[in-house]
Image 1 (cartoon, rainbow, N blue to C red):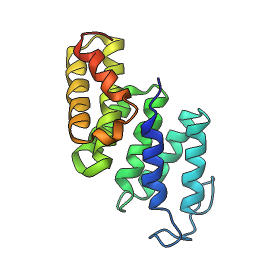
Image 2 (spheres, rainbow, N blue to C red):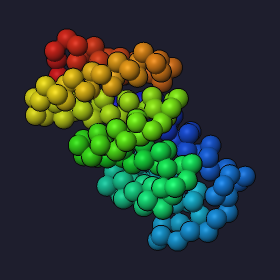
Image 3 (cartoon, rainbow, N blue to C red):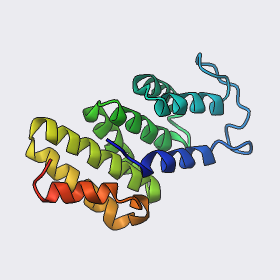
Image 4 (spheres, rainbow, N blue to C red):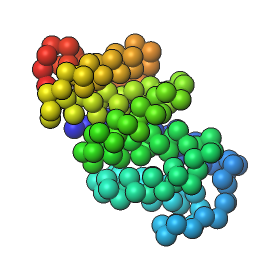
Length: 168
């Protein structure tokens, strides 16, 4: 499965919050995989890009937990949901992305809709559950209608078309 726009867009959202002037600039953290927020974030990102989805999810989960009360919480949860999706844990990816969808606005919500719709579609394909098909269609429809710029490559529109045609 290829999600072309999602990784780049999510990375840009989080990286933009990690600059040297941000709220975590130079903050020393210790969790066994880097000392600053940026180092820890990039370690998780590298695992994701290298296909080490469980390690990436574990690192994002740690960051998300540690920064649950910060302005990065939803972004880190979205990164976690994406790692879970890529690792094939569709149920947890759907759960985490649903939480982001409920609380986020703008492009972050659009990206959460894409992750959620994709996770629910994968669940539906595996189990044939009509509720998963409906949830996938609803999330992807919302994403494409309200955040069309996030699907420039057309991957989500294609997935939605497949769903609407009754295909898997």
